[in-house]
Structure formats: structure tokens, C-alpha cells
Length: 244
Image (tube, rainbow, N blue to C red; front, side, top):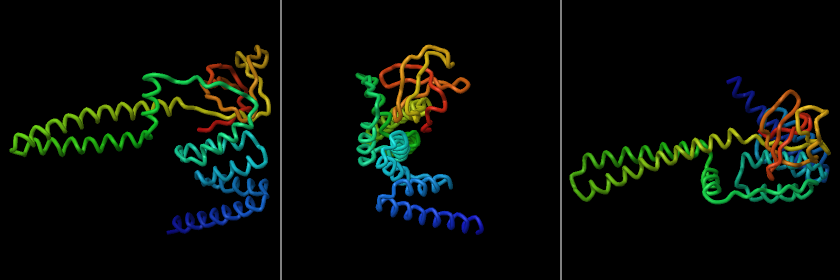
């Protein structure tokens, strides 16, 4: 009862803060709104709407890196939201770095796009549903006397079993994709990316606030990153902020 009352009180307080922040935003007081939104985040409350509003407030102040960062955080919770997708495109237009994206083609593109249609949990639940269908169809095949229905049930059960293995394969592929997906946003106004993880090493290229990178590995105070065009290098850990 005490835990329930405490959680209810915290929810009510965060809801009041959220409405207060929205009022500040609507009155054009974006910096004040950011402070209140951040206060909610610090309490442990996370939601796509909170991230979205926080991103919008930062976008209004031309805070490139924070706006993109919070849009990306919101997209992790609502990956198919049209408004989020549109707004993050506008925010990315404020970035300095123009980095090409190497398009995926053929079977690799098909596999990745199909795998990303559902989450790991979604594929797992779909597999469980197919197993249930297989059991039902197999029981029908075992108990029915009609040759026609027996044949249909057999074909259906075999099809369901094949689909179980396919969906499980997609589930594990999705798990590996998510596991290897370690995105980060550059927060430094300008960061020198090095060829090796030390200050004295050769400079490979420079990145600016708002650029999205993939983190490959870490070493001391450095992160090895990869860009969408395939370039790699080492960046100071303090210059980026992890999304996951």
C-alpha cells in the first residue's frame, strides 16, 4: 500500500511537471521548459512524448546535438511515429557534417528490412503463436477421420512448423542487430577523430555537433566509431553521448 501510494504520488507530480513544462513551451520559454522536462527525466520517468517535447524545445533554441539526441531517444520507443521521423530530419539539416549513407542492396537489404518489421519480443511472440497453431493442426490431423481434412491439417501443421523456425531465425537476427547497434550523438561543437586512441596520433577527420555515429569498441577514454559512409576512427569519450 505504501509503495502504491508513493508511486501514485510520483506519477501525479511528474504529470504536473509535464503540464507545467508544456505551458512554458507554449509561451515560448523553451529554456525553462527544458529545465522542467529534464527534472522529470532525472526522476526516472522516460516516455516518447517526454523525449519528443524535450527535443522540440532544444530544436527551437537551435541546440543541434540535444535535439537530435532526444528525437532519436523518442524514436527508440516509437520507431514508426511519422512526426518523430519528420522532425528528426529537420534537426539533422542543422548539422555541419554531410555524410553519405552506403545503401544496402539485394538479400541483405531484404533481410534487414524484414527483421526490423518487429522487435525481438514481437518475433518471439509470433513464434509462440505459430507453435500453438502447429499443435492445434497436429491434433486435428491426429483425431479427424476425413482424408481431405487430414491432408489439409497435415500440410497446415508442417507449414506452421517451418514458419516457427523462420520466425525464430528472424528473432535471433533481430537480437544480434540490436546487440551490435550502439549509436551515439556527437555533442562537442567540433571533435578531432584520431587514427589511434591517443592525443598524439594522426587526425583522420573532424566531426561536429549532432552527427550520429556507431560505437565499435572502447579503450580508456576513447571510443572507436564508424560513420554511415564506412569511415572509422577514435573519438574522445567526452565528445559523444550514447543513445543506448
